[in-house]
Image (cartoon, rainbow, N blue to C red; front, top):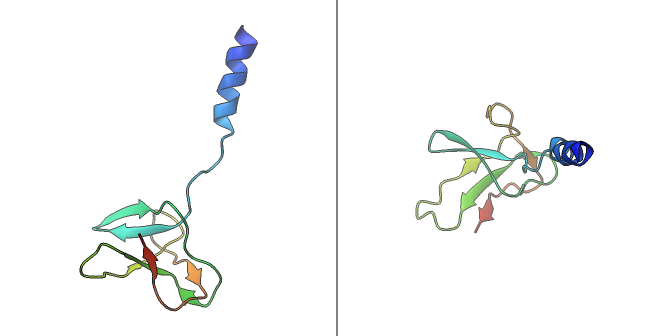
Length: 81
């Protein structure tokens, strides 16, 4: 029985990172996107939320420190539904 409990505990320990690795500054709070829209290199990756009436562009970063921008082939912001 103890081995069974130990095996279950280990399965949770090795689940790995399930986040997208794409972060934005949303109203002053580092917020991780569900999916990473950034593909390629060359331009700073940006997103716009589809339902935002102001169409505010949010720069996408590599982590929650918001210090390094993610790159993208597309110079236009990605639309997030």
